[in-house]
Structure formats: structure tokens, C-alpha cells
Image 1 (cartoon, rainbow, N blue to C red):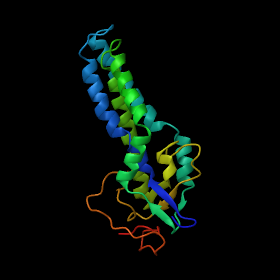
Image 2: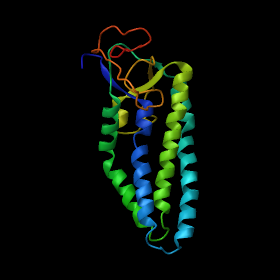
Image 3: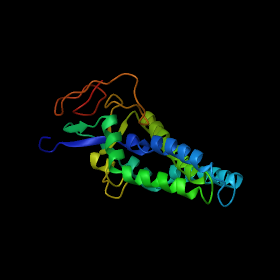
Image 4: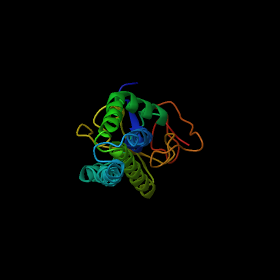
Length: 210
């Protein structure tokens, strides 16, 4: 990158990065965990898992809300000398950096089934629902403000999009990048320009436009 240039990743993409893995691996762990009767029995284990999953979903969705509101309120327009990271690259970077933690969570969920069958897997799936709900909340903010939220790419490796080391969020127009508000895939690929060129109308970024 040139002098003063830096990379940005979509906030909502980072938030939802672990959701798919937690959801499917949680269901798999719950299915495996339901095979042995466990110490408490399958019925108690499944009911406990459902309750834990609901609690986890609400807890993940509401976590650090004050910090999130502060970052959203202080979001500033991105400069022209920025490089917008593709959605797939952000997902791959996050999962690669946290792959051992994700594997450990899966093994812990399966292992806990000997005490509470299926409970650990349902807890993981509930956490995934909370992450998707938070991404949808961010998507509503982006649509209401006609702006996409971005953060330095380092957040995809450590700390998260609302971590203590994050100085603030940046915004671009809705045409920037290749992910829709909320971090989901867009149906059509958005063309990008090289960093440093003038952005098209509504982009607000030097590296992407419709």
C-alpha cells in the first residue's frame, strides 16, 4: 500500500464470520451428543441445551451494546486512500486466525454430552443465532444511514470489530465493497477500482464504486 493507505474490512462480515461454523458444528455436536444417555438423560440434556441456547443468543446479541453504540455514533467517513477487503477474504482471515478456538469449542461441546446430552452443541447454535441477529441489527443501521460500516483489517485477526484496540469505525456509501448491508453476499459482484482514484458518486471510498 502507498503512504497513508490502509485496509478496511466490513464490520458486519467480521461479526457474522463465526456464525455459520458455530451453527453447523453446534448441530453436529448436538446430534453426536444425543447418542449417549449421559448422566442426566437425553430429555434433561436437550431441554437444558435449548434453554442455554436461548440465553446465549440473547447474551451474544446484547453483548457490549454501549461500546457498539459509541463506535456507531462516532463513525467517520473513510478517506480515499483505503483498500476495501473482499468479504471472502475477511471470512477466511477470521476463521484461519480462530480455527483452533473453534475446534476446541466443538470438542468441548461433544465432551460435555457425557454429562448433559446435546446441551453444548445447542449452546453453540444459540450463540450463532445471536451473531446473525447482531449482524442484522448492524444491517438496519447501515440502511437507515445509507452507509456501510468498516474497520481496520487487523480487527479480523484480534479483538473483533468492537474490541478495545479499535479506535473507531469508518463509513462508505452503500455501493462500496462486495457485501450487502448486514454482511450477507450480494447477488451481483460490485466492480472495484484501484486505491487512490476518485470514487464514484455515493461510494465515499477511493477503492470501490458501483
